[in-house]
Length: 100
Image 1 (tube, rainbow, N blue to C red):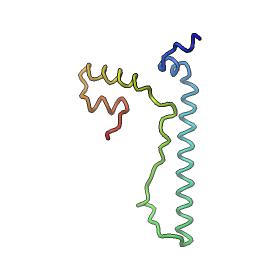
Image 2: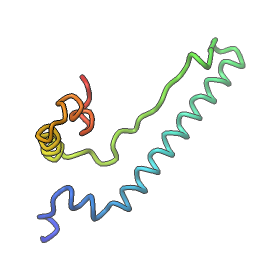
Image 3: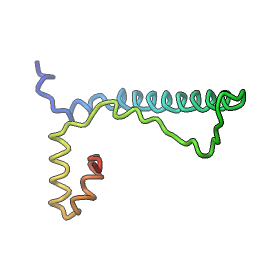
Image 4: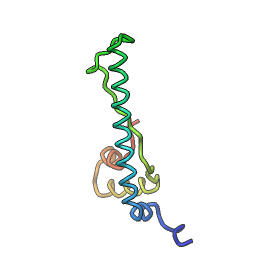
């Protein structure tokens, strides 16, 4: 039961090696998927299924976070950055909030 009292940060630090490998594997998978899709699009264009200008067809697959950030930690980090004098918009981008 001692491990149940660990914070998200402590768990992340404890498992950092495994997390790094998971993130690297996810990045590799996303790159492979992009290449497969582009290859399929080029083949389809080459055999006349559709017209495609590859330079105009740019995309990137984002798998998102392997382990999402804890909203409470994000808020604490944001508060610390703003308290240190960083503008709110800059601090929000740095912490990982999207600009919606």
